Image 1 (cartoon, rainbow, N blue to C red):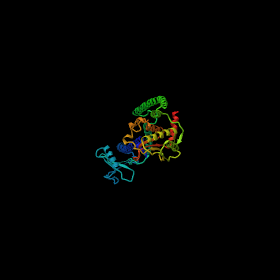
Image 2 (cartoon, one colour):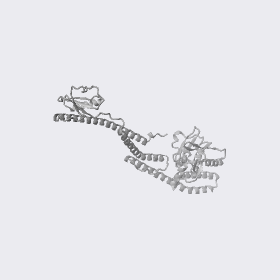
Image 3 (cartoon, rainbow, N blue to C red):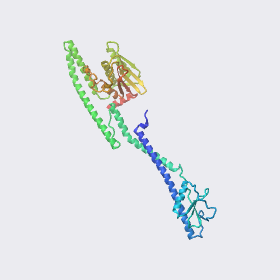
Image 4 (cartoon, one colour):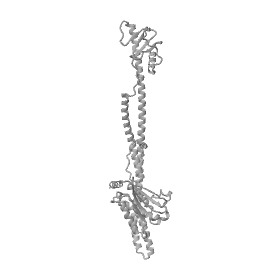
Length: 438
């Protein structure tokens, strides 16, 4: 099961969201703190201004009445509040800030709770207590319009960041898909060179590598096809001359050698062929049964090829591709394995499988990787028996070209098994490849 956090987009999205949340939280906390400090400074400035205005009013126009919320109270009055030692921290800081703005030895008190907030101030030169109103010091609310705006800004920032992360990882995703196709031997179109400079350089290098590999592969295929094609005519003449020889023993030996060389030439041509298979699709189970029946017909002893066909009629492959796969693998099993050879198909939750297995000695574990490489023969002594080391390489190329995967290995110590897996939509893939080839 794929986990979103494993992808580059998932990790970039998680990182961006975490950074945005941290930055917004820090900004909101700093804003609340700054707002509280601004409120306190404003209240201090306002209270200091009012106290100075009252003093100037008393000094210049003592006969004029004071504003309604400002008054002078005699120090002997019982209404004078006592100095409080247990005040909330914000209120205590407010009183200290006001005292710092007043002359030395100025008494600063706050009005009794329960009424309008007032500030009582009396300097050494004041005859009475000066009582002025002050703004109430409210703690910042936990949820207000700021939170709503922060949520809106955060949402737009997250959407923009996710789009940026998607745009950044998209070229990497395309490059990863192209690398996967290249690793399976499928044709790889040029990857668009987008994104940051380093990513464009990486994509450009990959495109150049694919072009060089394709050019080398094409040159090799052309060389093989040319050599094989040029050999067909001399081999036909050689066989004709061999058939006219009088010595039967020599004639049969020469004919066998010519047939072996002809088989090698045909393998060369098949390996060099790189076009899409445009043959009609056939039911794999029915075609396997027909191919196995033909092998049984040419076998003199008891049947050595068995079938276990359980894929059903919906498993379809191009006829030419399927015939080449079966003929190469069954010939390989007869040449290097031991009977009985089993051709099996099955339907799995992931798709269809086709397998060819024998009961020979199998292949050593260290040789399994190189078994499907072109021109590799694990037993050099068999080089003169009409085998070029291309059989498994041809099968691998045909399977991957048809959109499938293959696995070669020993099964239970009873010989070699080649297991081929195809997705349910294998036929549409093959049809699309054929259309693109046109």
